[in-house]
Amino acid sequence: MNIILLGPPGAGKGTQARYLVEERGMVQLSTGDMLREAKDSGTEMGKVVAEVMAKGQLVTDEIVIGLIREKLETVKANGFIFDGFPRTLAQADALGELLEFEGQTLDAVIEMEVDDEALVQRITARSTCGSCGEVYNDITKPIPPNGKCSNCGGTEFKRRADDNEDSLRTRLMEYYKKTSPLIGYYYAKGNLTRIDGLGEIDTVRGAIAAALDK
Image (cartoon, rainbow, N blue to C red):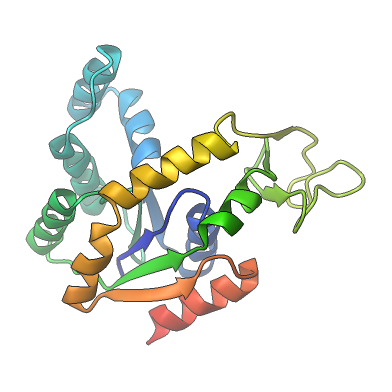
């Protein structure tokens, strides 16, 4: 099963992807992670990525598709979670063509719907464990009183520099301009399922599971 998680910054895509990896044996394909991994890999594709990034240039869609192709052909998994790609209609077309070429299908697109104002409140209160990435929130899930991560016991917590209201609103506008057309694109294809991305983590988790089990 191959799926796409759609949603604006802070909607919780990373958190839900981790559950799918743990519970279903899927592999998360995060564009950022793939680029960093490729840059340090020493492969031919990795050298291309390293050169482009060293020049401060934007990585092309062709390069990202090439990295995804490598994963599809070399990694054994019970499916892939596309996180951060596609972001545009052109990328969606390219991904569809790649999956068809590889004899695979796109089985579901999960849109994590959010209310912008509630999202701003959530994200500006967010911090993560510096060791394992567990997400905390000052309001809904504060750091334990003992100062230790409930997942790994780590004691260092970080806040992203861009987790402030002005930066987040800029990121939201960028998302809606570039990525929101994908919602109509996948709805027309019959792939799209919408869920409330601002529910409790386990509630969202259950909604995603129900959508995938149909």
